[in-house]
Length: 177
Image 1 (cartoon, one colour):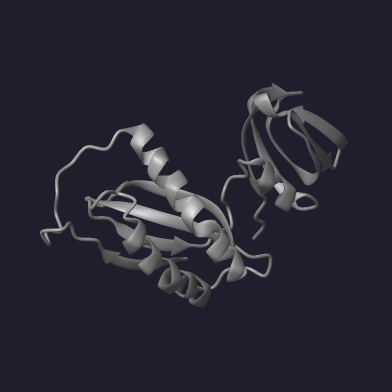
Image 2 (cartoon, rainbow, N blue to C red):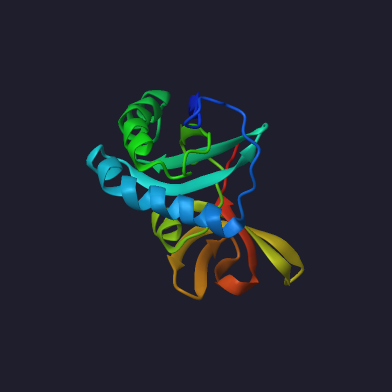
C-alpha cells in the first residue's frame, strides 16, 4: 500500500529535470532521510524499515517504508506522509532535484534482509531460498526460531535446520492462500 505524494519541483519550478545520480549519492540521500525522520516517525508509533530512492516511471521516487506490529493501513501511510513532507521540504535531501514522495507498508512478501527484520520475524513461518541445494532442496519452509549474525535456525516438518546466512539467497514471510 503506497500513499503517493506530489512531484517536487526545482527552484525554477520545472518538474522535469534530466540529471544523473550515482549509486553512492543515492545511499547518501537515503541515509540522510532516515536519520532526519527516524525519531519523528517513531513518535508517531511506527518504525522506518527502509528508505529507497530510485527512478521509477520517468521520475525519481523517495519511498519510506514503515512498520507497526498491528499492520499498516492507508490512513497510517497518509498520517506519516503529512508529517514528513514538510520536514523533507526543509531538509531538501536531493539538493533541489524533483522527486515523488511515497510512504508505504513493507508488503506481505517483503524479503527479510536486516538483523532487525530477522528479529521481527522470529516465531513466524518463512520461506528460504538457497543458492545451492541442501539435501536436494533449494527452497525450505519452516518457523524461524533463531537468527544470529551468521546463521538462522528453522523449525521445519523434518526437524530443526541450521543454515548459514551466506548460503541464503532470500528469506521472506511464508504466505499461504
